[in-house]
Length: 144
Image (tube, rainbow, N blue to C red; front, side, top):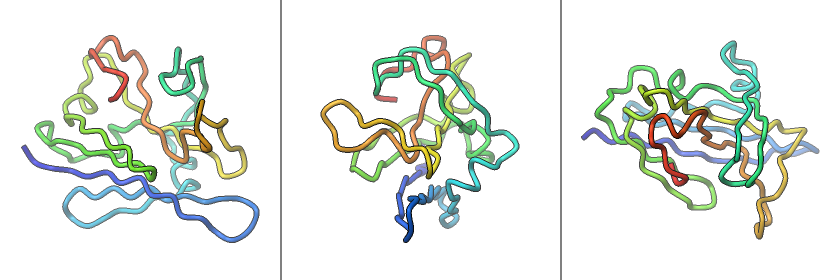
């Protein structure tokens, strides 16, 4: 399997608001996308996640389809997502590219509207958060 690493790195800016940069490295050099760039994409939209696995309640996010961010990635690739807090998850690209009804989305935390803290943590799920619509359709587990 080919390896693909999607690194989620938060970079703080000076001033009141925090800015973040998503770095996607598909083996051809990293591509950096800022929060602002992601939120302004024409395919960004509000999605409603029922029973969010991190917040344990229904949540609405502004998000971009992961499939669009990973265009050109072969279905047999293995994707590694690494969060700034060290959490990592390996997900087969086929689940994101063709989830058999499950849809992977990258939720983007606006710099001026931070998400709530996670239970027992001193931070929220942002600045970027992989969420699924209809996860049961693709047998997506809570750690994916």
